Amino acid sequence: MAEEELEKVVESLPSDVVNDLASLGLCNRCIFRALGVQGHRIYASPSLFFPSIHHHQQQQLCTLCLGILQFSFSDDSGILHNKQNDDVALLIADMLKRQRYHFESFSLEVSIPPIILQNDNSLSSYIKTKYGSQQNFHVGCISAKDALKFSLVHPLQNLLKSSLQECKSSASSFRIRLTYTHSKASKGAENCSDTAQGCKRRKTGESNLVGEKPSNSSLENETSDCCKFLLETVNEPCHFTYTCYRTPFYFGGRYLKYSRNVSQTRWIIDDERMGEASVEEIIGGNILQACQADSFKFHAAGREDIDVRMLGPGRPFLVEVQNSRYVPSELSVEDIEKLINNMENKLVRVKNLKLVGSQGWELMREGEAEKQKQYTALVWISRPLKDEDFQCVSSLNDLKVLQRTPIRVLHRRSPLEREKIIHWMKMETVAGSSQYFLLHLCTQAGTYIKEFVHGDLGRTHPSIGSILGCRAEILQLDVTDIKMECFLT
Ligand SMILES: [Zn+2]
Image (tube, rainbow, N blue to C red; front, top):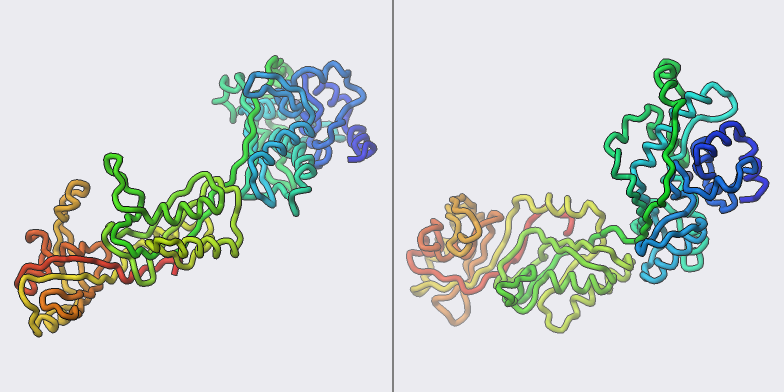
């Protein structure tokens, strides 16, 4: 900002109020914001000064912002710093370069001790009471958070420009977080809200204004308190830390599992891995590496047992990627899909991999709602197959089956009896065998298929065994289709 412009702003402010605020121990930026001065550039200007204020007053920590807007703070090693906004912007920019994030925009998140808002509230009432009747200035207060953002965004944008196309501090997935804490903040933080009525936040144009026109009715009550108004002197600056992170984003798609020795999620029992790999690790691991992220969460719509293959159109899944260094382009999403599908072991494949919005979890939950599933089972029976078996089985439409909680899952599920529907079934011969056949069936989601074949010692009824009047065993099972109203089709 040009010096003359700044001077003009300074001259426009009522000098009696400015001097009063300075005598209360406010820093220059706090004086500007207490008087509702708008304009990002003013707060970003390192050469803020008031000719009427003695220099030594400005050396002390501001009683309103505890030194935050003077860029005085202590770091993790307890070392005190007295800097300019440009220096702090430089510290942050250095950190960003070290951490190797790729971003095109950033958002600043600021956390400050609640006592500063309390101070602002008290000061607002004080100004309104004492000067509210004066015509020549606007009552209203820019929040300390906004003033801090204004003073850092421009220098930061300048520093980061070389590596970026455009770098706006808007709602971005890439966040720079500044955290200020103060030992004083713990005292009295509870009665933060009731100090004055004058400090309701409202959005006006580019910044948040705190403060309203004084109402005459409340003036008298406040007068006695506010004239004794004193901000406490602070000896210690705030502790300041800064960090950056990327908000999570989501990959969605469908997976196919070709192995009977791969679990859906990483499965370890007593330090021993079950199966040779997991869908979660294969898909999530590749995404993690491609995005250079810290971690991921895998979530699928339903699950199949480790020894059941997932075929057909596949099962919908989501991967939440946490603190990623990159946000992949559409093209690199395709590359990740190819990478997974071209793995040598061919255990898992993905389809329709894409970036989905943060509504992904909700869509997934909706998509999981009760739907139909199709399976193919390889079945063995204790006698040779007869022609009438085929007609018998295929004539059973919407068969009701009662299933008590299977023995194999009783240790983790409560014992219940549930009714499930087998919508249709079809038998297919296996060449060269009279006691094996393929059973294709479509069932209500949540049906225990293995138990429906062998009967689970009578706990599932009817079963293929009871229908055919012999012993039936299931040797292999594949999921061949999942009908769900899911977005990932
Ligand atoms: Zn201040």
